[in-house]
Length: 221
Length: 254
Image (cartoon, rainbow over all chains, first blue to last red):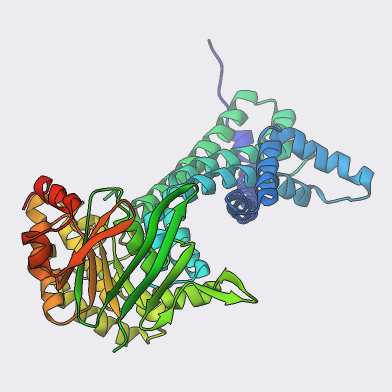
């Protein structure tokens, strides 16, 4: 094998590669924030006393979890304009990833809710807390702590899913890598660099989340 | 004088199963009442009805003269609203078998949560009162520890401080020492005993017969959802009348 690596044409494009990974991170953060908020509502709905609310929550979760994310992305971007709802590509992708994330986050939070012992809720009731305050001061803080490891896994996975935005020409890392690939034909080099950037980013996210877990996750008593 | 706790003809069902079949008893101010009986006799359920952790289907529970949990509207018996229930629950202090301390909070925060959020006390005043009660149960030095850093006995003492800091009319203990390692039982019983000696009104569900005999003013023996016998501890433990209680005492260790 006498392949001569030449990274120079790729490093020339350094700024756009960085802007690509920056946009990917931003897409992930915004979608995960929206998806988590939605997911929290769905998780509470899945445990609601009302039967219809519960079925609605489970329908939501099962539809979105059983659709490939790429299908949701393409459906929203190409399908919605036919129904008269045109979104620009970045908004459209954020909506798609947020919906997808909401189903996974709902499962994460549902597990977290189940992990809050009934005895703690009763202890809150016994000192005269109302159910809203029990949620606010007891259930939510414990749920978030218990859900943190699963939340982290989904975070990484959703960040990697931002590479699918390249299919609708959102200028994130994969999109630029493909562009540089076709302009320079340095195929191996460009995908090596893109891979490395993804790995470094994911690893950094892992470290941050692990530090948070270490501070927040409750030891078993 | 109005009794602190008054239970009248209390009935409770779990589905088809009737677990309380008409309970009547009273607790006067400063009185310490132990409820004993075999598992499944309904004693824990009775205690949980006193702070509305269980619903009940007939009869009345009065705390400090106030009927709690239910009211009658246009001839219909209905549960009172959530805020009313929360207020009524705060009239009693509950200590659970499994401590149930909030694991994400320090010992002190466990005690002050109810003071600030339910009693509306300013933070610094709540901390002062929290420290006072933690000191009282011998846990002041551990005020900043999380429950997971405390032994079972220490956790239970913090739980006692959490309940009593709310200044309840009566303290309820639900088998407070059953989940503890044997060598930790003493410290918790000592704490309860000293509160009893200070005149705190208490209802204890317990398997500690010797303790029940020593600290109680009155002992209530439950059998199959009914009170089979009640009276001063000397009489119940030394001269039990019902054959059921005689049999129960024979199988209980002192």
